[in-house]
Each structure stands twice: as structure tokens, then as C-alpha cells.
Length: 288
Image (tube, rainbow, N blue to C red; front, top):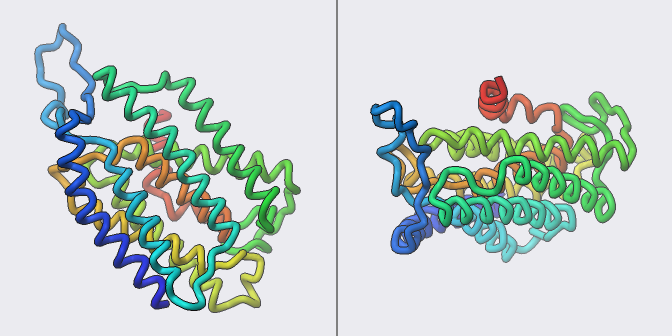
């Protein structure tokens, strides 16, 4: 329990002070969020035009803070790294890198579209399937469809079908959080509650190994979720309206991937629809 507190506190502090420093650095480099320009035929001012010039790529601070909190918490005896959690972190960084490239292309082109959306979608889908494949090949992750535990409903998919299932979940969640990132604090705030939920779920699995024995090293997963919760909390101070910085795709894709992978590794895949309910509604409304 102390490791969870350490991870949360360190991540929150690093995000709080690190984001402030990042705002200065990004502002000096002109790394601001391009805003969609209004049609010339319409003389009205675009509703979000006042946000033009706000630095983006704030997700870098969230990721750095979460990983710092996670690593520092492991200095405490009894907290060990698990291969599954390390794969999760690698997957988060891989998807965040795609978001970073997209953010960079937007800034350089001075438009709100970076990597052509079809290419970006295809690349994020490939990365999602790649993460799912690595999880199956290198770890003992359970390949059953799950709600609150692996045995409920417990439909066995096997490695191949599970990779397809998990890849779709990662892809959908990452992009759902990405489309949620439209209002100040919305994506970070909803993700914060999601990470708090997964901290509780993973810690509950620690306390009840007879029921949740299929979860691989749940304590390490709880520490990771707590670190991300703390990082989101620290970032929100600067992202709340009026936002001083945006998380960008590097943050949105990274956080979405983290939420999806925590659902997969804690065997709560179907429960993700409830935990990320705001993101589900946002993605649905955008789709419509």
C-alpha cells in the first residue's frame, strides 16, 4: 500500500512542476496547438480560436511523471518488476511515439491535421496488434474474455483470436481517448478516474489471490495505475480551463493505451466500457 502512495505522490509532484517547465520550453519553441481555421465565407470567429498558441505535447509530462513515480516506488522492498507490466509500459511508449510524430507534423505544418488520418489509423492499428502479440508471446496473460475476472464469462479465445480481440480494444480505447481530448481537462480528468478504478481493481486482486490468481503480479499493475493517476492529477492543474497546455496526441494515445492494457492485464476487458464510459460516449458521438 505504501508503494501505491509513493507512486501517486511522486508522479503528481513531477507532473505538477514538470508540466510548468514544459510549458515554458514548448512556448519558446513555438510548439503550439494549431486551431481549425474558419471558412473564409463565414466571418464569425471560430469558437476555439482563443486557444490558438497554447502549447501542446503536454502528454510528455504525464508519461515522464508516471514512469518516474512507478520506478521510484520500486526502491521499496517487496515491490518487484513484472515482465507483463514492462510490456505494458513498452506498449504505451510505442503508441505515444506515434502521437508524438503526429503532434510534431501538426506544428510544423501549422494545421490541426498531422499524419494523414487514414495512415495514422492504420499505424495505430498495427501497433495495437503488435502490443497484443507481444503480450501473448512473452507473458502468461489469460486469453479468455473477461468482465470482472478471467472466469466471468470465461470464453476461451486462444492466442490468435485473443490478439485480434485485444488489438481492437487497444486501438479503440486509444482513439476514443484521443477524440475525447477536445475540451479543457476532459481527457485527463476522465483518465484520472479510470486509473483510480484500475488501482483499486489490481489491489483487490492482490488481496484476493484465490479468486484473481490469473492476474500476473497485480501489485505491480496497481503501482503503475496509481502512478498514472497521480500524473494525471498533477497535469490537470495546468490543463483545467483555461488550459495553459494541451496533452496532444502523445498524451491521448498514451493514456488510452494504458487504460486498455490495464483492462487486459487485470482481466476486466468488458468492464472497460463502464470505466471509460465518457470516452465511449465521445467516440460514439464523433462516429455519428
